[in-house]
Length: 142
Image (cartoon, rainbow, N blue to C red; front, side):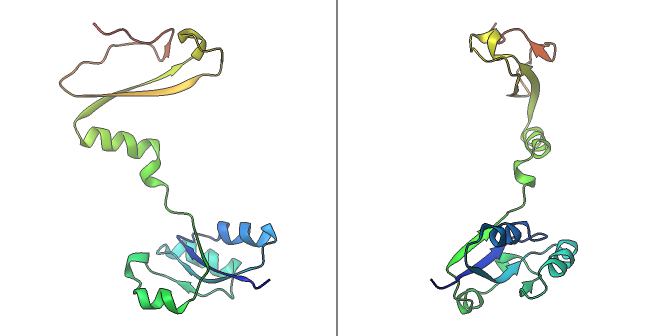
């Protein structure tokens, strides 16, 4: 079987490249792309033979991608848009207030005692009910 030609986007320090290598799949990373210069120094140390493009993926012409003749794309995109801090900042920027709580599912009839995280967001004109951080039940509408 011929080796897969892989394009690695948002390559970071090369965690996905390493995972691919350890998987035992016959594959060659034909290029890695990341804008982070610090991560790229580490990537180059870890994988000195892999072409590394210090750019954003939006800045690469389609012809350059096509010249690579890759079979597969693997990537590890930035997680900032999915973090809790980013969520709270976005809610605040959009005019919401929020309340975070840890709720035991057993208190609402679910037979599982592991605490669960809940975030309730409301537009600023509505008031949040003041509750302790661990609820014994779901808040009731007034």
